[in-house]
Amino acid sequence: MKGYISEGFVSIQGEGELAGKPQFFLRFAGCSMRCKFCDTKYAWKRKNGFLIILPNGKKRLKNPVDPLELANFLNSKKGEIPESISITGGEPLEQMEFLEIFLKNLKNFEILLETNGLHPEIKDEVINLIDIFSVDIKLPSFAGKVIDYSVHEAFLKRLKSFGAKGYIKIVFTKKTEKEEIRRALKLLEDCGISWNVYLQPPSPFLLKKGLKFIREELYPFHLRILPQIHKILNLR
Image: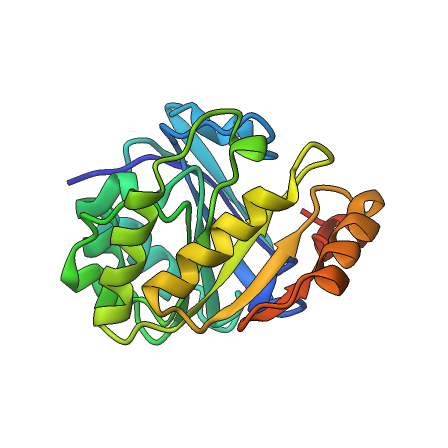
C-alpha cells in the first residue's frame, strides 16, 4: 500500500506539549476536512513527488511512495535528523494502511501524530505505534463548517480506551465565540479526557482574546494558551 507525502523537513515543534523540541516533520498529503483557516492548504493536493530537506542536503522522492522505502530512508538518516518525528498533514489517518506499515518499519524514533481527531476508525495497531497524539478539536468558526462532535467523541474514547498519551489543541479565530470553546471543553469532560488543552491563536495578535477567556472561565482542565512559536521564530 503506497501513500502520498507532501514534504519532509527538520524544524522546531511550534505547538502544544512538545513546543521547542527539534523534530523531523513528515507531512502527509491530502485532507478531506479542508478547514477555512488551514495554514497548510498546499498539502491538500496529492502531487507526483515530494522533497525531503535534510541538514546536509535534499532528496526528491516520487509519489505514491512505498512505506518501507520511506521508513528505510529515514532510518538511514539517524544521527542526521532528530530522533523525534512529527507525522502531520494534511491528515495522516486518511492513509491508514500506508501509515501503519511505515510506522512498523521505523527504528527507535519517538512518534508524534498530529490529527484532526475525526477518525474513530483508527486501527488498534496504529494507536499502539504512536507515542503521543496531538488531537485537534475543530471549532466551526475555524473550520468554516458544522462539526459533528459525536465523531470527535468516538475518536477520543477510542484513544482513552487504549490509555494513549497526548494533548488537545483548539485553534480559535477572531470570530470564535466563547460558547464554541465551552462546548469543546464540555466534550472533553464528557469523554473523561484529562490531557493538557492548548488554546492556539492563528496569529500572536489574538493572544489577548485567549488570555481573556482563560481568566473568565474556570474548567477542570489544564488549560493553556500558546501561539505557534515556529512562526514567531520565522521557521517552517
